[in-house]
Image (cartoon, rainbow, N blue to C red; front, side):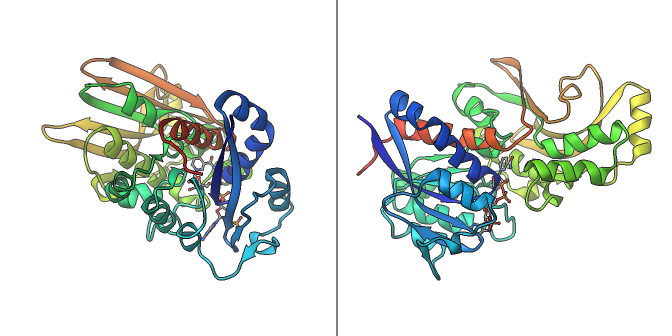
Length: 347
Ligand SMILES: NC(=O)c1ccc[n+]([C@@H]2O[C@H](COP(=O)([O-])OP(=O)(O)OC[C@H]3O[C@@H](n4cnc5c(N)ncnc54)[C@H](OP(=O)(O)O)[C@@H]3O)[C@@H](O)[C@H]2O)c1
């Protein structure tokens, strides 16, 4: 028997459209293997919210956005309603949040996430801002209302860092963790080493849909720091905030720096690090020259990776190649399917 999952999708950019594409391509597989049919009943972009209880056609919606259309142009557009107001009212089982990171207010992601969890609506985030600003509060709302909250897409796209940390390191004491969490800056550094300009490499990351809507988050190190904060809260057992992380990006690195380190067989990488101290962790993000045989130095181009040192599991190394946003959309699907397996769905 197939269960219909009434789904709200906030953000119809690279990731949101990727999710629609997966629904188009994998509808039969999702029904056959997992007994699930995702019915998109509410969507939002920067122009507003549209609600269609019978479900939007994912292919038509994706074509509409790809053709430059706005949600406000859809017949089901609801003037004057915010995503949070919509989620406070509509019949819905699942929220997928893929709007841009806003570290000042967290909006629109923070309010819509609060509204959904308060009604027991399972929530999957690709947007890091709600977690960076309100990790504990959102988990409390979720627990109080028996809502699932999953966010494996927020850290290193489809690399299941959060799942590994929470599920597969049982009873581990993590002594040190280091990683490359931002593929835009990793790609820029590598391309610059090969002689390409910073601006040209960044433009390619933007063209591919990998860069953040505000690319200063990538190159100034904040995206990496956001991911470190999410990791710290979700499996290092500390309530870290962004202000607890020392952050330095890649914007001051020159061609001469890259050439110098290349000549001594080193690569400069933007490294996130958590180092265990007596009662917590020192958290940092900064460019580091690394010998070419280092695991992180060998994370090239569109790769991201993490190295986790612990008392029980020795040293784990994980990495991914992600040159387009589709794997992040797939990570949202992975979270959604797992939440639906773990929780009963009404309706
Ligand atoms: N791209 C990746 O590879 C990747 C990887 C991991 C995580 N993420 C995260 O996933 C999220 C989405 O990324 P993306 O690449 O899809 O971004 P994007 O291409 O910039 O798309 C953002 C979407 O959000 C919409 N939006 C903007 N302001 C809004 C508002 N106030 N209310 C509702 N919708 C609003 C935009 O509307 P318009 O269409 O009208 O502009 C657009 O549809 C971000 O938080 C990002 O950090 C992305």
